[in-house]
Image 1 (cartoon, rainbow, N blue to C red):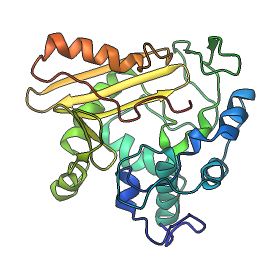
Image 2: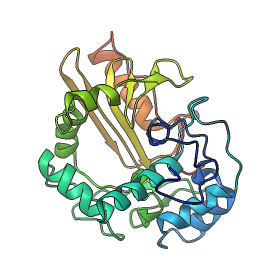
Image 3: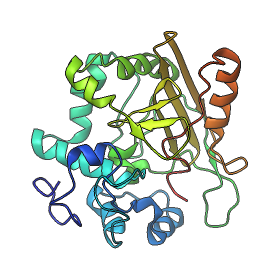
Length: 269
């Protein structure tokens, strides 16, 4: 990563593959207490990629590169900066031209501000300074940037689930590399390059304050599952989208019960 972005702790030893596979050892900026306070005290403010990275860079790395798995949004923000440097374009343009357009995702966007196309559901979160549930619909998602500041609808996610799991936009060789999953330490869940395998279900989950998704595809049965809900308030310490996905697959695909979350928690504690 140091060849693209200076100032990353141990950056001369952390590879792009380790960033994509969540094995860099970089401290997740969303776990920094100052970041949490700054976000929740003014959730309408705008963050920059380098600004959010600074919160994580205050901390020592949590392990040596490649030693283990730890989900860290710092990894994805850094990869976003790499994309901008290599292409010479803003990340939102690259995603639109190279991902959304060729995949036919007409109702999906990478917001450049706090825009939220109508119609949309209101989102509710208890990730607040008071701990009380609040309406987070218009909170600014800029703090997530390349780590998940995207907006979509049910039909596009249904299309995307198969596209990403089967590698429609990639060469077979590249997709094979992406699907080389490794253990995460969580039962039934292995992680590749920005994608997971949860007992046969290939894809990813997502969470912002007030909203959660699970978008996965089961090649063994050519089945697609998309869950979109408008709360991220934990239930029994678990993400509600994970609980719903587990319940659905327990009935629909009992031999392949979804029982994993790549984040194993929420984007902000």
